[in-house]
Amino acid sequence: MQTGRHALGWTTAVLIVWLTSGAAALAEEVQHLSITQPGGMPGWPVITGIQRSNNTTKITWDGPSGYYQLYYKTNLASSTWLKLGSPNLNRTTNITSLHSNLFFRVAGPSPLYAGSKSCLECHANIHSSEVMTPHTKAFTSPAFVAAGGQTNKNCLACHTVGFGLPSGFKSASDFRSTNLLAGVQCESCHGPAGNHVANEMDLTARPRIDIASQVCGGCHSGSHNPTFEEWNSTAHAIVTEDMNLTSRINSCGRCHSGTARLAMVNGMSATTIANTLTNDANVAITCAVCHDPHSVRPWTNVLTGIVTTNQLRYPVASTNYFSLSTAATFTNRYDINICAQCHNDRGATWTSSSRPPHHSPQYNLLMGSVGINQNGANAATNATPAAHATMIHNQCVGCHMPHQAQGAGHAAMTGHSFKVETYESCLTCHPTNPEGLVNLTQNFVVKPRMQQVKAALDYWATTASPMILRTNYGALAWEYTTPGELSSGTRGPTDAQQALIPAAIKQARFNLYIVNNDGSFGVHNPLYTINLLDAAYYWAVSESFQ
Image (cartoon, rainbow, N blue to C red):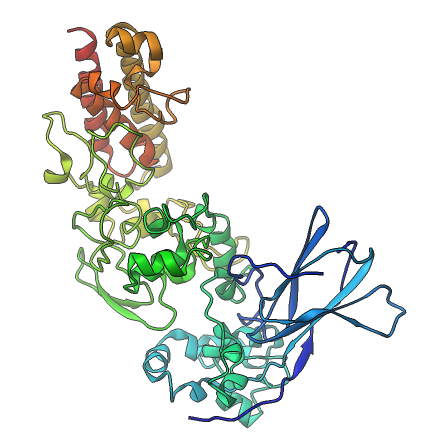
């Protein structure tokens, strides 16, 4: 190992002007990269935001690991920059009670790049797998060379390490920079490692580990490859509720927190997760949650037998039953469709009365393994897979992740909006107007049936339900204690009163909400969806006219 001390070098961030009054540092959640920078992790300080609240102004910046010093001055004519607070590792400062019209700058550690070979001694396993990924060939791939990318300054930041910075890649004619810093390497995502290599025992200089999608978005963005922009427009980029709460981090967090889910995938215990991630669980489902940045994996498609090598953590197709409730022990199943890892029914049953099933039964409905059949059998033990589950060999990906290269008159499409933005994949089986077929299924077959079921349940509630339910809840008498979105109102029958609702009504409402919360309105599994709704309607009507 190389050891020794290093002198702290400083680089300075862009000058920022803000109207503020405001000096004291406060503890807060773990700070993740919040901006995209060509090349990935910024090599020098970049001020990312100034946020004013009451009498406090929060200034944030980003850059590699190390100490930063915030400076200010009151006017541009002054030649003196004054220190604001002491050097800190937090990349954020809250200031109070200064002046208005301040100018800020940030000085931070010098971006010393060393190249991935310097990581080999301590990180041989990761290095040996990472070099097998397409990242390492980003500078030498035939397409990049043919396009003249090796000499195009607009391309080099994302195809080399540290381009444009003092110790980074310089040019294809520079022997040292070309050999050491060509391609996407460790420092592209973790930041410059020269100070760490000089003294690996200095914890403040250790390169950053950050799963924020902004790290990937620095390069996987733009008109030719809008992966980040597409992802950023989806619900995957949003944490809808506070996941730091101990009651949520190990339950809801397994699908709503990127940091919690990756910790589970990596085998971290629930106790350790609760103890170590309580200030770092509000991270969305970022790129690294689905993609392994360090290695490629071979997957055998169970429907075709074709082996595909990629950086996905799970395969794109499966036929196995899968359901994982928030209370169940986390199961890291590598034989389940990557989307199904979270888009499953979470163990929902018709006997539950507290609230409707979660908005995530897509895989189970596709496989026909959720809901109650007309004979009353639980679908989990008598599955009815859709043709879409067996004929679309990439299953969810086949429809929800269309790809399109940028061309004349149309933008590039990477599929990371997860929307069905083209119906070309449908044409093989539905050569005539597949979009019209979707419209027919949703708006003329399934939604009218849903309305009929809802009307039948309302009729039972207002005319045939036990008097205490009818009197206290009216049309909500059939609902869960916490009603779903199909009803207007905030409270249904209490836990105790739920026992007064017949099993047939509970089964009917369960089927109705499974179809509603799947969100495809029949497209995922048309015939089976109709079966569930017809059964629900029969049960609701039968109970109303006994």
